[in-house]
Length: 101
Image (spheres, rainbow, N blue to C red):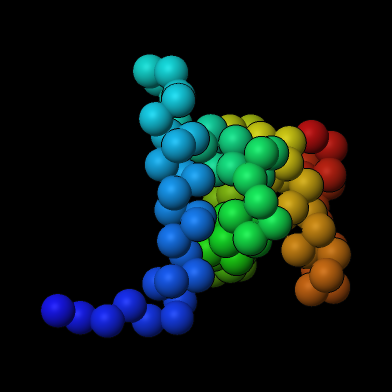
């Protein structure tokens, strides 16, 4: 039997919260809706996991050519605010279309 790594143990509370959120979602809910719900209702650790585990990767993909505009409107307000905050923290100017929504 394998032992859990420290990072796996750290993710356990997030996994439990995410499971609760997913179980209470209505049909038609997207993964982005679930991430937004975690951003809005999760613990600081849960929100950090979403920001560093997904939103940061999304912004980095945009730097490599992914058209972020294709999903920007589907991100919730908390997720969009986190993306803008990441850009500000990194010293990256967010495009006008990001700031306008």
